[in-house]
Image 1 (cartoon, rainbow, N blue to C red):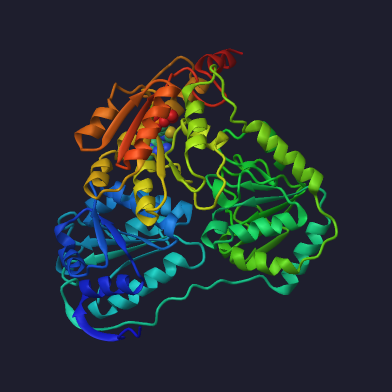
Image 2: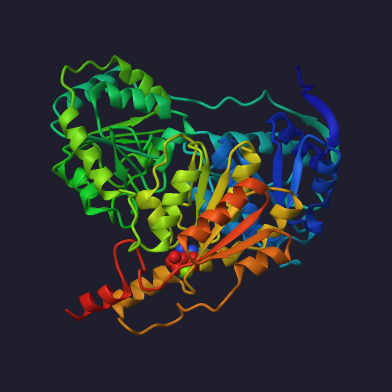
Length: 553
Ligand SMILES: Cc1ncc(C[n+]2csc(CCOP(=O)(O)OP(=O)(O)O)c2C)c(N)n1
Ligand SMILES: [Mg+2]
């Protein structure tokens, strides 16, 4: 269909027209009087579904989860300084997680700018350090240009968030708007010389290792990565919270580099002599506090963003490329050796470290993961919040297919459930389950009402240990037995869920959990399953007692 490139309309209508041209299906918001014309233009556009959230933080996380699932920008709308402040956690997460997002914020009238008008904040300045581009619209006729540029910036290079401030007097202005051609996203590839260099370096390796990150997902290179790894029997590890870059049950998978990664899995990096870092920024968590890629190793770093290369480690070969293009170019590589034995050994180490065999001595946290693994289809999508409860998922759940995991590399609490709602909207055919702790869940749990109102059937698991367990663990390590600010009160998540019309269950044993989970799978309604856990087993590998003992030594 040929789209008309020139039309008279309001600035608000031009925003919605750009969304339509980019095939936006859902937008997330908390309404405000500052951007009513945009809401009105959305009212007139039936192809775009507007979700009204309970908190801008929830709206931003939902948009972020939606964007991670669709690889298209998540769109959030909010009002002035107040809405902006509330949603900034989602913008920060999109920034750290390289997720495309467009944030549209109502701003005070241009006549009042600079007088500290009602809820006035310099929104472009406020978001500059945590966005790829933050801009205020001054001329109505430039709205299509800015919106189209926002879509381009959010998705080009390393994806990320763009913030647009919309003074309220600009929105109703009616002018002739010019729309540019629809978007194409550049996918640069490596040069022939770079491919030759990789061939030479890989050919010299004794113990090569691929560390694969979000760039594999955003360039949809998961299958190409399997082909490349299989060609030479190269072991593959997933970067922090990017489990599903590579099938975890594949003979070449060697584990996940996250918080509390098992020493046997870390051993793989220790022994590696050539590291192929593919689409990962080699973050603090992935590199275990920048400790594991030591100077004796050779590093090939492939990333779509020029700035990512050399940001942490100066690579021996640094290539700016889209991962999919790079892996296709690497098909030219010809090396006679393969690394079957090394890969086999490292996969075995992973299997040993992540064994899901459970017995009655295991805490309920591990049983729950085993039950999820048993009952969920391989394509089910799991989202996670920040907190120690997540350690059991990260350590033991085998993600077998692509697009099955979404988690915040930013470590933002409150993320898991709203992100699951966004993911479910994006992939309604999938079973979507979120995992949260009692602390994180309660930061955004009001979005359960959004799920009920908008009929988004997600199963939310809440691991209730009545504490900010992660911080309690760190507290015990540094200030043993001095518990401060980390205890939480008694909340019935079952009853809170029921009070907004969701299904609620509370369970204390694996059997009860299995039953409740079966029912949740059957009735396909927004559901909260509260799992009462103990406090003593404070992480996968430590108890409160063992930490206190260690601190005494
Ligand atoms: C928004 C935000 N605030 C604070 C923190 C610091 N923090 C990390 S984990 C954690 C506690 C998590 O508690 P809970 O969700 O109950 O999970 P648990 O560790 O008990 O399993 C806190 C406060 C954070 N990561 N994000
Ligand atoms: Mg907790």
